[in-house]
Length: 447
Ligand SMILES: Nc1ncnc2c1ncn2[C@@H]1O[C@H](COP(=O)(O)OP(=O)(O)OP(=O)(O)O)[C@@H](O)[C@H]1O
Ligand SMILES: [Mg+2]
Image 1 (cartoon, rainbow, N blue to C red):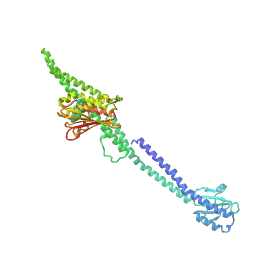
Image 2: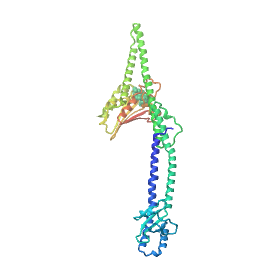
Image 3: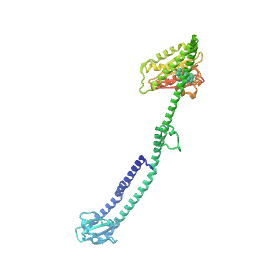
């Protein structure tokens, strides 16, 4: 089995912390809280004992003093002679001091005997026969406790180290899975994040990472699909005028072969198809240019009210034909707005042309302008059929038209609103649609 690097890293970090805690921090605490106070107690008692001895006040009652101290200190107390022989003890059988230890006793302090089983606090009294004094703590107790403690600490470390293995696995396994999927994804299997084996319900970072990848792959798939759709839409949009143009050319050819003059209707239809095609190609080109990195707007101060009036005026021939009226309503100051005038005019033209296209005879279109401190709003409201709720977002997609028959009666290519959204978003704004009531549509943008 291949062990992941991340797993090893986590495992070793954990072990390092575990050993630091067990063998440095805990022993230090143990020493400070158990060993040290015990030694201090012995030292204190011994000091008292020696000073009493020196005053020779209680020489006569030395055995009971030794017993007293032994009881209070929880240790055995002994008085040794110069050669290490035991002169007096607190009761238990105490071995004489080894000669090498006697040699070491120059200062008052703690000493261990060779077997390390006993801890001595030795001090000297210069008056014979008490040449050396010692409290021999049966340190076996403390030491035994200490070694038992370390033994169990070691057992604990081993148990924890074994337990850490599956624990680290729970972190690294899902990460490994995600890494594997990401690799598959990078090799072109874009559906890999959609295949869910046993859904993870938790909301930890790893699950969120998995969700983020799933979302990302979903978005990418959506973009790939959109690209495919766009390509097929473009072919379709170009295919229809091209086949119409082919028919017109064939008709003209037939006439020429018969040395006749082709009818002006055929030539006009051909010319109109060429115009449509040229317009579509130009719009597509403009649209794709706006997607390019580094595309910038030509932002200048402009009078929005004037711009709207100009756009409305340009539609007069069309509105006049259907007796449609356009009313402009204004609120707030719109004299100085920072926009790319040409692009916003394009948005307004599309919103107005849509409203006119869908307005009934004698319809009324309202253009509402509202200027606020930092933003302004423009709404175009008509009393046509309105836009289906389910298409509120879709109408801003490239080539989307509510009428699936794609008749040219009401429609252009379905590029206008997609272009409008792109322009508004480039201005840092937003565009949306509302249906005011039973009929009609309001399309608003805010910059
Ligand atoms: N005011 C409106 N009332 C009803 N439907 C609308 C209105 N505005 C837009 N739509 C719907 O949204 C679709 C997309 O509009 P868009 O302006 O993008 O395309 P188009 O007008 O069909 O073509 P183009 O603008 O490229 O000439 C329209 O085909 C229509 O179905
Ligand atoms: Mg349009």
